[in-house]
Image (cartoon, rainbow, N blue to C red; front, side, top):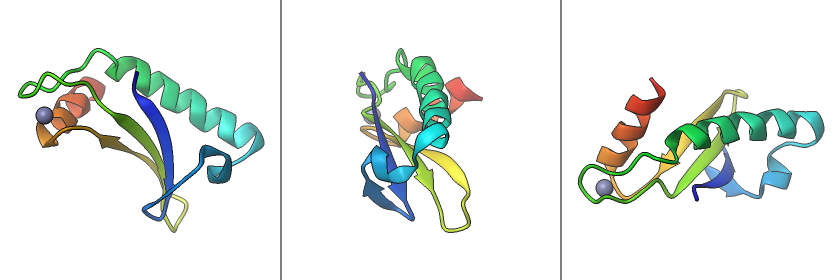
Length: 83
Ligand SMILES: [Zn+2]
């Protein structure tokens, strides 16, 4: 199963430090929805699934996701699935 991780300003942090309360619930629900869509995606070159979905928060509070997998081809396949 794809893991869900979190990072702030590029540094990995526990999910409990990423946010709290209702905010964390919203992020986790969003991450879960993305994970569900990516669960069946495999790398066209290596046949491996995505390793982790990283919720990230940058300095200006911009939220996003990073995809962690074997290579760029897998990341592209996942991005295509989400597009
Ligand atoms: Zn690959």
